[in-house]
Length: 192
Picture (tube, rainbow, N blue to C red):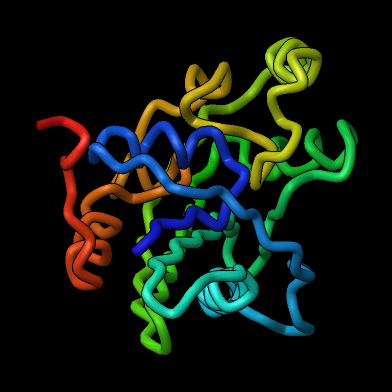
């Protein structure tokens, strides 16, 4: 039995390490992550995580873990910004308001798939033009849903959360541990 992480995210690797889990392989799937017309954020996120886990090549007894994190403002899905202009647009929309961060997990072993999603609430303080421009200049927004990462420089913009901090980062540890255990994967084996 091999454990395969279907993600290229260094943050997810770091979070798995907190559980004593080191993947035998890392195989980020290449799928279309565009939302369907009228698709709501939570079903979208769950669909993408499921498509990812089905797209990863694995043997029958291997365990494959995939996740998708989406920033949602109401019904709007804020994915990874294409450029600094879109990152600024996202951050201005989030400025001074609460939004949801959804992380959906999909874990596959053979024909069985376990799924879970975690929804957290995040408040972003009102951003000044100078704060926004300084943040955009860091390029930390690149590759981040909603144009920010709570564990990076944008953490200074977030005075309040409700939910899972690790879920907001991109891999909710309590739920990930539960799915791994359900699939028969031993946790903390690297720590003994």
